[in-house]
Length: 168
Image (cartoon, helix red, strand yellow):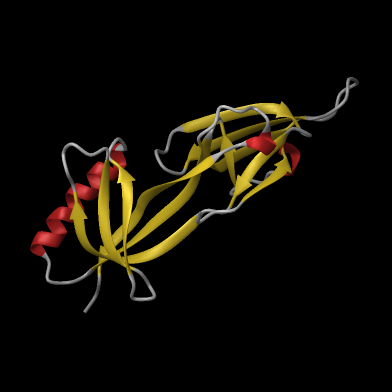
């Protein structure tokens, strides 16, 4: 796997970090902490934007609650080909890595942002003589419904973050 999951307490999460909220990989957009009351611990309210589909998720819990955090993986690639079969749930993107090796990355068709990017990329591939540089992000997505933070299962999910024609 391309990512590393770490556990931390909710009270230590900072704005701009990344955490799993409601089983989705999110960039933390807002953190609010209430003071401790007469009954114990402070409460923390997190607002996160999903790294893949841009949906907003919110979590409110005591500050000592454990939460999974991760570092977002960004890699640069040069686009070679797009494999798009109508009967497949994913689109294959054949590309050249920074170390000159080739790989195929699979991205879910169900993401609206992915389909918009792919349509534009297909047009660029057909019409452009220049190579196309792209940044693909890789995030962990929780695959188990387990509420115990230490026993979660994760898989990789990819998305196109940006792309551009390479300058001559």
